[in-house]
Amino acid sequence: MKAELMVKDLHVNVGDKEILRGVNLTVRQGEIHALMGPNGSGKSTLAYTLMGHPSYVVTSGDILLDGESILRLGPDERARKGLFLAFQYPTAIPEGSLGNFLRTAVSAVRGYKERAQASGNGDATIGSELMPMREFRKELTEKMALLEMDPSFARRYLNDGFSGGEKKRAEILQMAMLEPRIAILDETDSGLDIDALRVVADGVNRLVGPEMGTLIITHYQRLLNYIKPHFVHVQLAGRIVLSGGPELALELEAKGYDWVREQFGEPMMADS
Ligand SMILES: Nc1ncnc2c1ncn2[C@@H]1O[C@H](COP(=O)(O)OP(=O)(O)O)[C@@H](O)[C@H]1O
Ligand SMILES: [Mg+2]
Image (cartoon, rainbow, N blue to C red; front, side, top):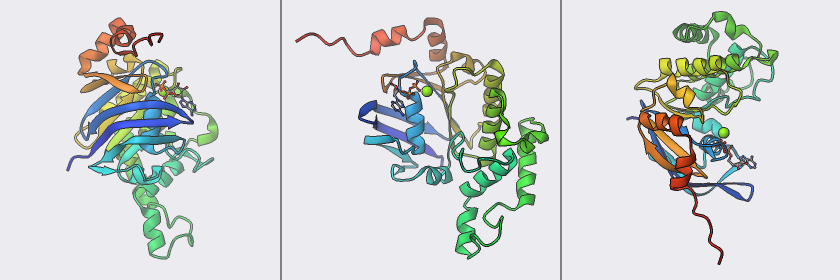
């Protein structure tokens, strides 16, 4: 069965402020969706909520994966069901190489820890909760070749200070290794340079296919010069107000967001 992520009339509060005010969206395996919209429209809020960040409180509506609500699942359980949001485990490995970080992440998502604990092997031997090194190495080498990445990159240390482009490369490699069914990429960084954009686009283009669906969040139409989405959605003030095909992104590039605001923005409150 094709994975299907369905967001239904989702309302989300951050603190006591309602940020998402009824989002509807369906992403299926094999589809590329772009979510666009001006700054502050709640795009990142949607991404965090999809992954189960505890600060984002769902007040009504639902998030379904393959028809089942995932609202009560934590981020790690959502990841094991095939959802991906870049750097879900940023604090798990404060130091160590990118390769080690990836091995831990892949092992967690594929349930090595549970299996080790079930067999009573849990915390006894170092490495018992991890994917066997030989298998991991083989797969890492294959994925890096697919992405045309230099094998030495995986030996870099996470706390070395990666450049913007390298961070993106690490994120894409993580996505390749975790093999998500639905990947959510929030391109929040306003300083994202053209190199970093290319890394993201190239990685997505190589990884996307019948096995992976993608939701790419960006307010840069530029990114969509490199990735051709099947569907484009525009979010405004916590709602998706407009959906269309790739031509919608071109229209936004040409005309900006003002016409969307005029057409779909809140009407001015009349004095009463
Ligand atoms: N952790 C937070 N605490 C308080 N306000 C937040 C938080 N996260 C987001 N917001 C507010 O939610 C709104 C939407 O933000 P965000 O989801 O980051 O929008 P976008 O990604 O579209 O730029 C903004 O008004 C922002 O100030
Ligand atoms: Mg954002």
